[in-house]
Image (tube, rainbow, N blue to C red; front, side, top):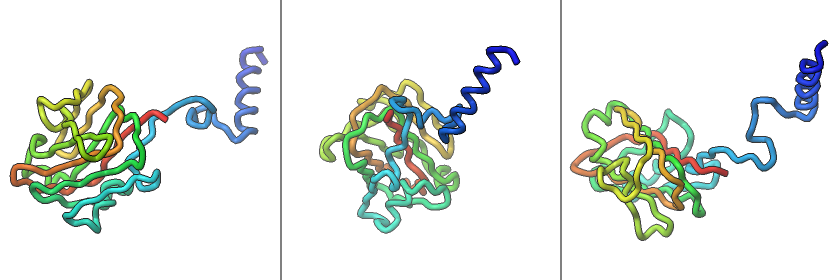
Amino acid sequence: MKPALSLIAALAFVLSACGGSSSDSSSIPGLKSDTNVALLSRGASASSSHNSSDANNLIDDNNNTYWTSASGQKIVVDFGSVEKIKSIKLTRQAASAAIGSNPDILIELSTNGSNYTASNLSVVTGGIACTNLTTSITTMSCTMAERDTRYIRITSQNGKAYDFIELEALATK
């Protein structure tokens, strides 16, 4: 066997013996990866005065559940602590998306739950610029410079209502 192949085979054996994987970078100590901090399983919570019993459906990592909004109604997701958010993605049901456009959904970020800044994902002149913005009938996503965030507030506007399936907020951890 050639020396290079022997080295590769030995490394693969060591990784498998340690329970590691050559493709799983998240288990390497000191290596950071993108983590969705907007999940119930990670300690996040969601609250709303409208359909409050369904609020956590927005962050339950289940595409079969959703939270239904009403015009002017807000849902707030709290990560439990300030995170350095680098992207957000909001998924909604296509049936509800057909009745409105993205400006009818206001997405704002805050560190304290009182002072919010609008994302360019939802308004053209928001204070948080998207370096990469993608929208479709079911998905709105924004990649941005890392921003300290603890709360994300989503508001349906202009007489529109939506079925929001999932919110994803990625932070490097």
